Length: 107
Image 1 (cartoon, rainbow, N blue to C red):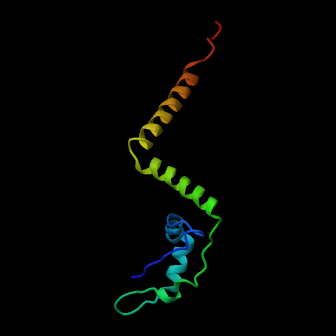
Image 2 (cartoon, one colour; image 1 turned 90 degrees about the horizontal axis):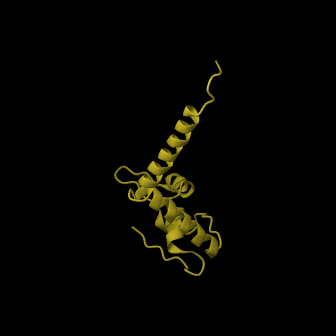
Image 3 (tube, rainbow, N blue to C red; image 1 turned 120 degrees about the horizontal axis):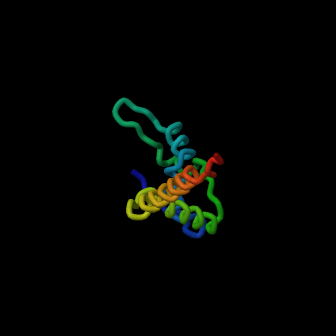
């Protein structure tokens, strides 16, 4: 177990969490994991030397905001699901009207 204390003037803690959970850093963790006969472990003392991409603080806030919006749409059934259903209903009505609108045959 370890405790990370980011320098808040350089990195937003929520962004650090997102970065650590991202595929790039997870791959790095996997490659640095020491596999033992009982418990796999991560050498915490070396963690500070592992590379991680940190954009400017303003960009971190923008990324956090985008993730929050995506998370709300993906996980909030009261918002995401009704919006998706409304979009599919509108799409269905559009194609139904297109298929049922045709010129009458001349006899």
